[in-house]
Length: 99
Image (cartoon, rainbow, N blue to C red):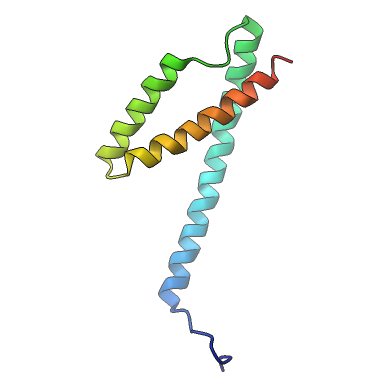
């Protein structure tokens, strides 16, 4: 029996939500792997006295990702913003190795 005012959630919606939750967990695991690799990059840059930021590579990478997003039917502006946030976090982490 349902409480008054509560709507029954269709089983299909619950299954789709579970799928989204599983995909979100996969994304988090991928982010962990990405940050592990970028941490090694940051440590290597620090050991060679290289700058934390490579603006040319960053812009080339963003452009490639925008084009790929468009090819896949994704919003390229969103993808650019998403990856810029990732890049900013990576640079922040890289700068911590210089201290």
